[in-house]
Length: 250
Ligand code: PEP
Image (cartoon, protein in one colour):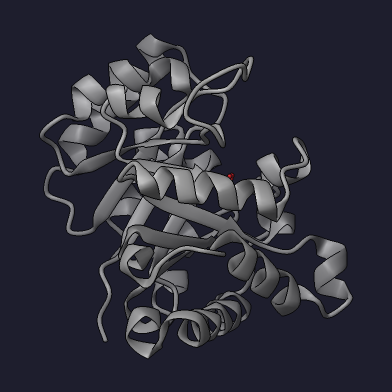
């Protein structure tokens, strides 16, 4: 089964609108002949600016999070209705920084996943173990729980809108990358979990990105693996010079 490659850039809490516009413009022109599926997720404050630049291009506009409710007394949060209004097409949920810095648990992430799907967004659901969990031999168990609980109540009809990003927490922003073999083993395992939940056809089709210090130097090796279908990129997504070679990996 050949799945499309999907390369996403998470700009995290970086860039003013002018800086974001400059990067979006560079990516729009340099990825115009790119052969894969692409997304960038700027800060909420730059979504409108970047969305205007990406409209009509082959790069999707993503948000880095959303609130678990449509509207109401949620100071500081951003609603799916507001994201839709800005033309956002996909939402990253359960990123390790949301899980570990802001203490989001699987139940909260699951509410966000279901709400985003209800409003027609694609979702990148991030899963991944801490270093101590890996060292304790629990990497698979952690990813299994985060996948099952993150997708609780999601119908088979909505699974094509889900991408899983396997991001071992110890590899994010640290310069340490999982070996292609270790990453592929977890991807294969998560695919089996999806098969158990939604059947083998859904499991064969679901895109599973790897995230954690992906760079131009390791992108091709990672993506050569059977179960690695793309990348969720943080640090290297912040300049066109570092992101374009990943997005156009050979
Ligand atoms: C991320 O934040 O999703 C990520 C993978 O970051 P980095 O590429 O910087 O490790």
